[in-house]
Image: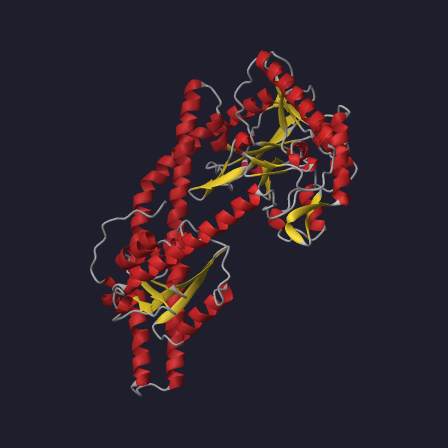
Length: 577
């Protein structure tokens, strides 16, 4: 189990020292497990309990709520938990509040380490409301580790029972998936049984019939898209089975979706499950010979004879493809992988070799892969892209290398200035926190009226909020500068290697080029990733390659042009006139 590094922190009672003069900037942490059914553990209930606790605590100010939904407590690699710990390390928060210890975590060892070692060493107060635990009041004695062990044992017991039930359902041929395969629905009377969805089953039968008649998968994709048939996820969304937009794929059929249907034995009436297993909280594929297949568990969509015939045709096509690849000349390195797009339909362009002499082209295949009217013929030679990118590298590598040296020289002074300002801000925050607590004590002692307390309290809280935001901005700026310097260093190293060897590599393209957009007339736009230091223009600047009257390629000359000859429009640089 991955966990944070256990550094040797100073075990001094930091929290007790802070308690004398601080108002705590608190994080409310709430978590809900996937299988949580315990009454009172909803995210809303947890948040209400924590906010009610803060409302009666004069020395606590809520900064942010961190929520991990549908996340197990047995491990700590949770997105919101890690973000909260990062904010604690940066000083943005210095108090963590949970409803109870089980919401913080159900791993006794790691939870105990965080609560008893790491958080106190960072000067972070920890409160579990319903367990009446507050790190300012002691370490909890034997109660804290005992409750952590109970929470972990509960989680392990629930997990074992769930896995045991699921394994038995799989062995019995009962469906355990979250959503039925395309062409089926879950039986309203038994969610572990599949029934045929006739509307989608018509599409499945048509796909199998096409392959049986000799139609390839790519052609089937085009036929389905031209006929306006909804792909599986879009179909399920239209039926109200998928509500989350993140689970919905693109509007067109893809080859992998067709291939997945053609190779799924579920359409012959057999239940095949156990294709993946979870190891160290990661899902890994299981070899086909270990899949669990239970025959004749539900009504088939197609006949078993048709399914076997299609599998034979697919194997024959795969073997023929392997034989052709075995005899072909190996492809050269694909340096523009994932970078070249059609400027008209926006789809990635596919790299194709014209013949065995090594002439490579990028072509938009939307006409063949989606439908005939999806786009027009768009293509460009790879060697032309390489020539233009190398020309840009020759022109701008020196500028970027020089900027890298300048940034490295300025980094220590900038970091020192940022650190000094953070020290000053932290001192002012401590002072404001001390005065804020004094206001409360003065009101209790009768030295201030409620109105005076409210007015002064608002002023101090506004000052604390302003200082906290400034500290966040300083830390963000420092991280951004470090990332920018790292990017410049990476480019400088890669560019130096390329200029020395005169070879364009994937590393160079990755550092230099964001995207390349190809147009119908074979011209293209190269969107660069770095900043043009000569002209001070924004990043992601575009350089347009154009055709001359005789059909030859004109190299980009924008870096050599005068300022008056350049027009910038939404980050795009164009020749005027």
